Length: 240
Ligand SMILES: Nc1nc2c(ncn2[C@@H]2O[C@H](COP(=O)(O)OP(=O)(O)O)[C@@H](O)[C@H]2O)c(=O)[nH]1
Ligand SMILES: [Mg+2]
Image (cartoon, rainbow, N blue to C red; front, side, top):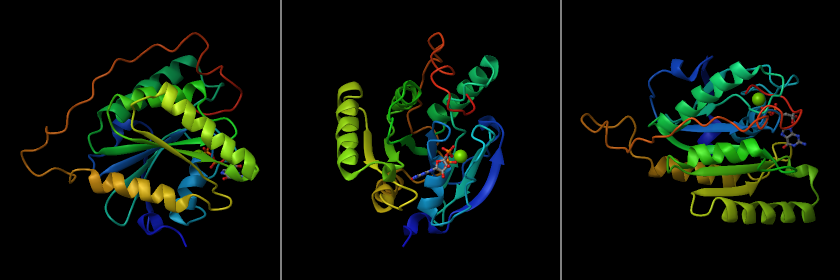
């Protein structure tokens, strides 16, 4: 049975630019990951719907931000995938800046779900995403998806290695991770429980009048990526 938090998710809107997102009407949960990592499939699996988020046959084609509204008023914000080598540098840089702005400045954002292929978690771009987002102090939950492609033994090793990496490289940051498979529908309840706990902890949103500035504002610099670091990392496609 699909988890109840997501079951009534429905598509609300798409925007081409995070600055065009409407004022938040509820707490938001961002979903991010490399293109082709399995983000759309994970959203569909969580929602118990097969075609809510588009599962791409042509990775990198969609550069839109899609917003899905949950039954409780919160929203899932499906961000464009990253890591697409064929995007021109100028376009990639612009997108990076816009997404960084959204992820670090959106007060309604309760946390980030980071989708990574269990066969190669924490690529350089994933690490950069963690580092950007962690500065907000908000939690990150990683889904190591496509776990069905690994044997039970490999799954256990992958999870242990990813946990070791996270506690070594992201010590002290609010980051958790789990195995997941959209195909086999495994890990749904665990993911739902984490997200539900974020929403429960998030102060009421929108805030009551006069409390708009209560949440501390994140501040950060936009860093120039290392030479050849982002787009050239590998051949799997996406938008920035
Ligand atoms: N075996 C397996 N394949 C998956 C899983 N999740 C996604 N895929 C496949 O991976 C490809 C990319 O998935 P998609 O959800 O479009 O990735 P996105 O670009 O991150 O949104 C598609 O061919 C999916 O069918 C999974 O859990 N298991
Ligand atoms: Mg997708």
